[in-house]
Image (cartoon, rainbow, N blue to C red; front, side, top):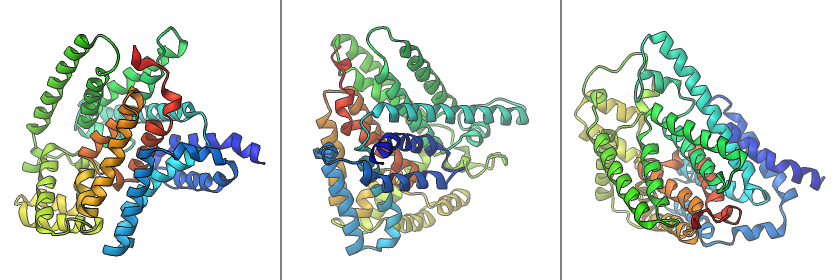
Length: 406
């Protein structure tokens, strides 16, 4: 029985990552698969597998999760805050449940395939919607926003993960799979451009700059890094100064559903961050924070008092926009101790894998998204944080094949 379960366990794990992008359509499926993994885990795990957890980053993440639970239980409303702390535990659980899996390539393949399925679904619906509307538009257009399988932030994150995995899979010498990986990279980058995911484009540029720190030909790589840096600054300027008619006029197409309202712009984040700064200044709870649920309530109060545009104010209050910065969200919700523990987890992870590009890139990607999104406010975000953890530093031994020493 143990042998049979050990044989099918990796494929159950694989199935989980295949179904994650379809969470809105088969909402119960990821949870059922996750529970199946939990039930099977004791029968397939070996004592030696737990050695994979003996790393400073994992210990720091465990301490971080434990602190959030204790802090919430002692100082805040535990049940209300569990909507966030529970997702932190999901990411931790994904890393633990992974340890009986000895072949991380299966998980990588599942992420690549799920990305291609999500792209196929989205492009198909984009074509249908464009045909019905009678004109072609990209970026923040209703065609793009309505056609996406999942939220653009996480669909872009999935595409960047797929690009990194394919890049890591390309061999220095000829290999038939190289062509497939190159095609996958091209498809995902083209899709990121199609949907206009600015965070994903920024992440790709930053990861390109980080890549220049590895290998030989430092002068040439330094030049490319400077060019990419200029591109990053240019992208930031474009985002900062983009048209914000959605907040200033009545031009929002009726065909756009609530989904388009979540196509977050620079102005949205600037407003949220300004309110978050006011909450941090007014609430004197430096060490333990004010609780995650209470943070959202305080932000909503700030929106109602500071936003003068009625349309914009109603949108912010109705959607109860969070801090859109995971570091800021943790600081407000759990205080400086929680923030320090989270930063130590990421910083310790990057330091531990700094000699290898792929795991370093995984953790840098997490930092980028944490700067612009609260990844623990969505279950899909927690799943992908878990994937980054297991591919970032837990599976380091499987990834160190020398590419970074070219």
